[in-house]
Every structure is written in C-alpha cells, then in structure tokens.
Length: 54
Image 1 (cartoon, helix red, strand yellow):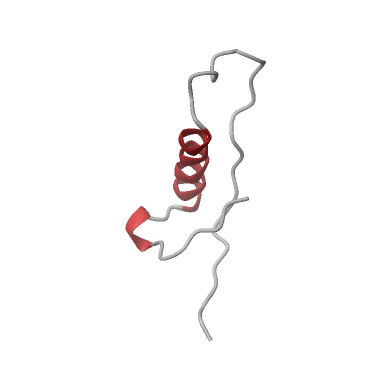
Image 2: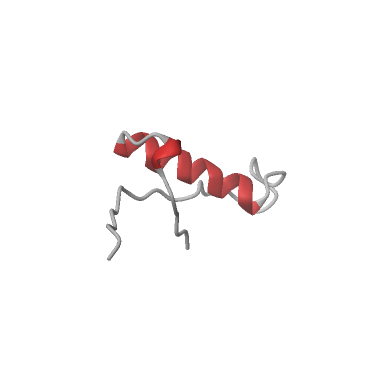
C-alpha cells in the first residue's frame, strides 16, 4: 500500500467578471493554488509524486 499524505489546501483567487484575472487560464490559476499549498506545507515541489486537484 502506498503512503498518502494530505499536505494542505489552497484555493484559486476570486475576481469579478473580466477583472484582473481575465487573462489567466485555469491551469495558471491552479498553479498559483498548488504553489501556495506547497509553500504552506513546507514541501519542496520535487518531493511530490502525484497531485490531485479538484
């Protein structure tokens, strides 16, 4: 059995229609949330083997 660790959670930024995030794609916004969750957990990106986002 594999070891599973929930390191933390973060959400994408919120904005208004055609606001400051209008030019950002969903993967870009998701990347911001992933980086924040890793930083909060004190985990290095290279230590992650698999990530589930949803």
